[in-house]
Length: 487
Image 1 (cartoon, rainbow, N blue to C red):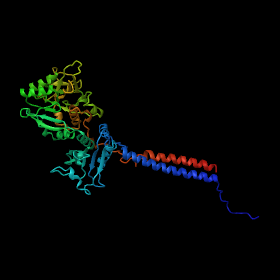
Image 2: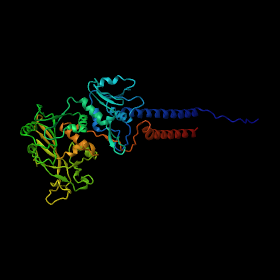
Image 3: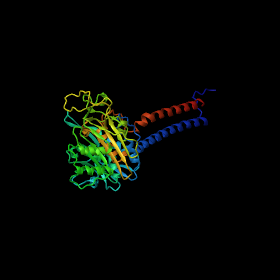
Image 4: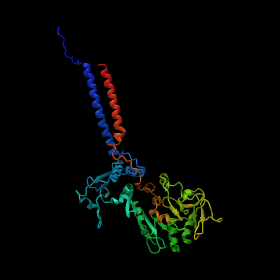
């Protein structure tokens, strides 16, 4: 018989068809799993803001205060960005996205001002122009609103080498959170700056006006000799560096205010000398101003090269908690001290130290000396640099006071790389009784930028997708190998 030289074709059996089908099914399952995984992570990123912020100062993250604020919203807050399509500000957009991820009542929408130029007219006040790239925060009825320009969302500093202002920080969270407070607050607390005793007018500190306005304080001036305004326990009175004393009528007016429930922020100049009527009001609580300058010997507690530029120690309080948590210091140049009474435990009054020097400090009374050489007669030890007083005699009669024997720290707060602004605003919000609304600090741009701006591209690809792909492929290859081995 002639030989058949033709190769025999492999026999197709039911078993081989079955194993081939398994391979196809495994491949399909793998592809579907990856598609679902990609869709799931994208949804988590877009809906819940699960982007990874690896900047050294958490530039794109928002604080627990802001998150809680959004979660507690009971009515819709709308945020309209005015970016031209394709020209969005990535930092502003990403931070707003993180706000929106905290609750359904925070709604963000971009309105292209070129395509819809009439939209901004409903938010435009007379004589004002709303610029492209601005951010509008409003309620559902658009009756109350705040408008922030793009420059409002950043902090700048003057660069003497270039002669220009450079962007140094991000203020998006602070501005948006203040707008939420404004829209959800029924009444804005009033802050009165006392006048008539050589105090600087608050208008001399425009940065302070802006900071207080951002925290929704209604700031005014008051001269007790000429006004008919009656201070109430809902108002906050600021006494800032008086150089002359109260007259007797003013003293009685303020005494009645303090005894009937008050909120007082008082910062005295330790070089101002005796102010008997002001000091008598402090004596209502047993507190005394010490008219000397505190000098530090501990190198950790003063600015390099100047022992009277104090970096004080924080005492535990609602005011200092967030600053301690974030390792932020304040700077108090040319500070005096306060003498506090020793109180027996009381349900009605508490007097607490807020800022203190180190135990190595001393107080000098020789202001004219060119040196700060310590004398044998100079008192030494720990000095109280700031204090809080709470006097509670029922809901109708509660007093809160923050006291300093220093004023330079306020006047220079804008120009020092310390947390003076944060500290003083925390004091103001504590006085107003709004401890959950303590100041939210802007974030510096001077950080190492390792931000993963797109979780789908970075998080899923680097952390999830490729490991899953490798594992699934290995499993599929192993199963196919085992099945083919038995064909």
